Structures are given as C-alpha cells and as structure tokens.
Figure 1 (cartoon, helix red, strand yellow):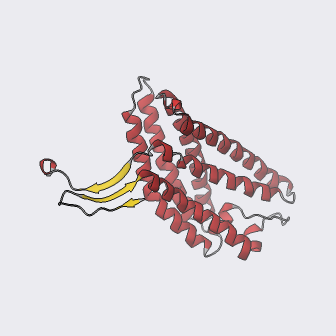
Figure 2 (cartoon, helix red, strand yellow):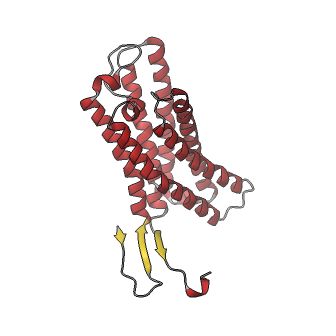
Figure 3 (tube, helix red, strand yellow):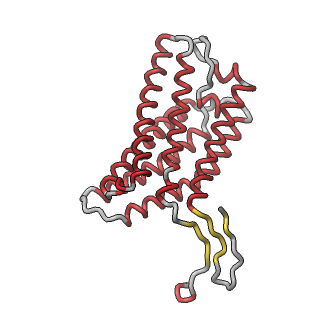
Length: 250
C-alpha cells in the first residue's frame, strides 16, 4: 500500500511504495486490458473478431483480433500495456541486481545473467511493438514482434529457473516451484496452440480456431502469473524517493 509520511526534515522520505504493490499493479494493468478486450469483443464485436478465412464457426476471438481489430479495445489495451511497461523495465533491473548479489562460482553464471536480462527487456519491447502495431495495420511487423515476444518470454522463463538452481534459490520452494510449473505450463500450452493453429489452417474444422484462441489465453495468463512470482522474491523490498545524506550530496 502507499505510504507517504510527512518528512520531519528536508532529508525525509518523499515517496514509499512496497514492491508487492508494484508487482500487483504491473500485472493488473495487462490483466485488466486482456479481460476487457476479450469480453467487449464477445459482447459487441462478436462477428468481426471471430471471423476466420475458413468461414467455419468460431466462438472465441484470438488475442490479436480482440486487442487490435476494433475500438475501444485497441485503445484500452494500448493504454494498459503502456502503463505497465515502465515498471517492467524497473523489475528487470531489480532482478539483474538481485542475481549479481547472489554468490555463484559457476563460470557461465555472469553470462547467463546478462542473457536473462536481455531476454527480459526484449520481451517487454516486443510486447510494446505487437501492441502498437496491430496485425491489421502491418501484419509482418506484428508477426515478427509476436515471434520475438514468445521466444524471449520462454527463454527468460527457462533461464530464470536455471539461475535459481545455480544460486541455490530453488531451496525457497514456493517461488521456484511456481516458476517451474508456470514455465512448463506456458511451454506446453504454446506448443499445443501452434499445433491447433496449423490444424485449423490445413483442415478448416469448425471449432478448431476456438480451441486455439483459448490456448492463447492460457499462454498469456500463465506469462502474467510467472511475472507475478516477483511478489515472493521481493516481498520485503520497497521503492523509495528520499533526499541524500549531507555527506553524499554532490
């Protein structure tokens, strides 16, 4: 929760925010945007967002159709992703510093930390790209942004689990267990979604695209849940703005 005490002197705390609050707010932005876009599309733009090139019955909109095809969904989704992107970069830097504070004698550990940080940042950048360039505006950019997003997301999840093993963080069972389970769930659902997508394109069976859309939802929700595990990793941390001590001022 927010705590904004009145400072007793000019070196007092100006702003204090628990990291758990930051984590919840960062995840709730895309979660709200996702739920709003899907529900609004089903209620008010069903025909437009569920239509496929096969012309067979479909009962759920794909994420691309829900977030980028119609308004106001497109505006709400872009607002939510824009709001959550800055805290995501902050969380990436927090994890970078966290891993560097952990002792690990493995010679490849520093390189894996750098790769993991790069993948975390790339995932956020790719999400911004595929959000602000919809498939109807520029399909090529949207498609390549999605490929970059999913590969960097899966790579980041995998490396995070590996780094936790290397630093013995897997002994903190709750966070590591959920990270590992969510990574495996995300990988399996994405693989199934790819198979169903090609099955739909090849055979045009009724309902196949509905299954694909539902699997897409599971991929997105499990990705959000993975990032939410920061709740356990930094539950005792705070973000603060305060004045520097007199002897440390420039």
